Image: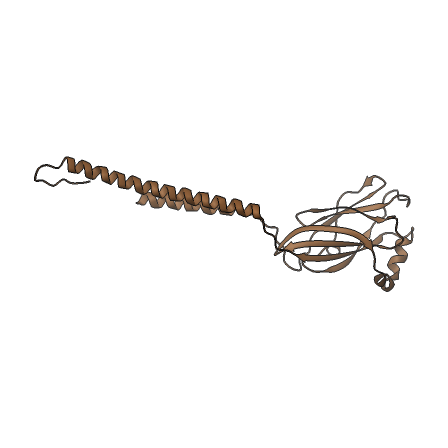
Length: 224
């Protein structure tokens, strides 16, 4: 019986370890946390390295907000080619593809709309696009439009609007594997238990049979 208990305990420990390893580690955020972000620029086939952005320019977890991001003057800038920018967002480093922000064939001041999806304390993904800055905002801040079109004034400032969208993420594949692994482990534990129990019963049956066979006439055999 002690062997059965020890074996069952070991199997339960293995099951707990299996379930723990099946649950992915989470890069958790709390509402109000700064979500780190870095940017890269490209002009005339020349790219910058990734630059970490300071906190006041970054998204704030689960908080809708706007921020003005400075764009430094590209090396060798002449105004002939478009200037585009890319981002990496979060500790997960979600990649935002190239966005045209200067010389994008539009007479309006550009603005970046960035949508961030999250569930609980996890950042799930990021998308972004360039749109025209609303006239209402331009009227309130005419200096942004003036300095944006002034070829001699740098850095330029791009307004980024961060919008958060809460989602419920259900990972069907991972859930299936966890349930399958749990069921398989429980079946294995049960099989070990049944095998040990059957073996003990078989051993006792053999001993009793041998004892009855060797029992002397009128005597009592001792079963050990």
